[in-house]
Length: 325
Image (cartoon, rainbow, N blue to C red; front, side, top):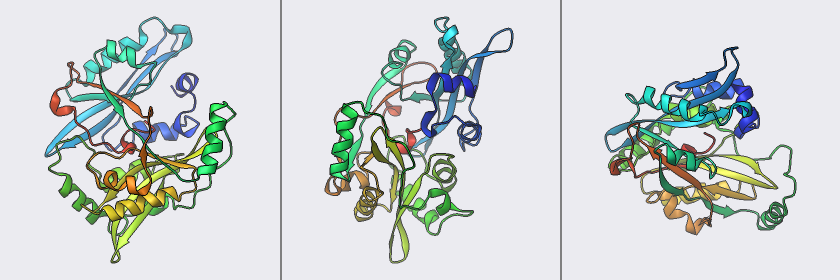
């Protein structure tokens, strides 16, 4: 499967489709192991693969079990035979009794195929940018427009790693911060991930090859906020992808402090998605973050039975809910 996925989708977010990354994503996921199907020739050769990543959303006191189509490939010698459609429809049937929602972020090439199979286009998930090093960003943008080769080599980032921050136990103050955050968000009817310590550890501390970093701020010796992101190369540019910002309810000052810390991460720019109504979204404009035009990910969804009902159409994303999967 890894060989087929690499041939079809290249190396993915880590650059190499390793067995460890596959296991982290599909076996160690706290929402459960991924269901999947493969297409196999009579001789035992895998020529198609289709995997659904399990996910879980919450809205008020309701848990919405979901799956997201990921890691799909058909060998070039077997394309045009309906393998993709058959694997998808059969897998939808298998999860119909346990998943209430199916969602993903298809690219422009794959979106039409999903729409034909009953997905709804729910629009663009916007991205905000903060230019951290204007001259370097301008040079990189010009090089990208000129289609110059991407830079190589390690990215230097002064922030501590999420893996070290989590260590072998829960960081001091994190449990209380998450309890306060969950209490404040309990009345928000939009779909959101319940950010628990085990989830955050899996998502940012244990993700192999993704180099997530952590930023924290304190008030009176207590943890007031934490954010996670990762430095990476985007062509000639170095981007810091800010995946998640968690602060105490109403603490826009802490959110602004974390947003500014991301801009000091050593990258040319910061890219993030800040859900409307959050402290981070409110603090973003004064911290230099602006919505980038013509950028973002396309969100598509359906239920196993068909159309998405209105109560499942409102979301409170963090970028970490969508990127790398």
